[in-house]
Image 1 (cartoon, one colour):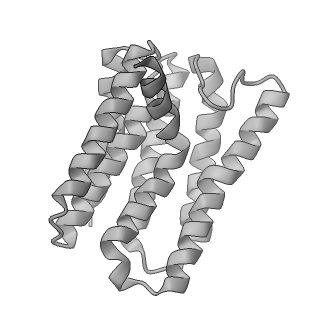
Image 2 (image 1 turned 180 degrees about the vertical axis):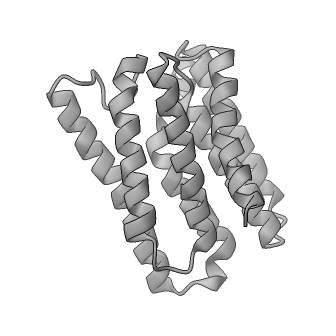
Length: 201
């Protein structure tokens, strides 16, 4: 059981969730984009949300600023990676994705910028919230609104997402990486900015 829960905790690490959200978004809306645009956007997001952060985290680890590039345990370790994520997401929005037709996808990244800013503020007040919960709930909320906007009734996809989120967050509790309060607040930090973005369309 512990191995399975640990596997989910690593498989759905926060760093991969923006790409997962992007792939699910295009799964629901691919008919509105040509293949070149799809590949370009997916490639850009992969570079900005996975490859560059991993490179920077490795550098921070080599400098002794963080102990691990996989899981950040203490609030102090989280401050710099969170700030870096905010900067990278701002660059992604304003300089990488600014000239494409995936407007609602940009709204998702707007919500993520708010979420990471709130996580960073929490760290500054020495509070640690679940980043797994934040990113996974941001994904679910975004996909729900995408389904509503596109009148898609993909209940199977939604149920799978909820199941994955439930198992992953249970793994965080089981592994004692977070308590219930940190999971709940992390979930709100992830979901509420996405709701706010869609309410302001």
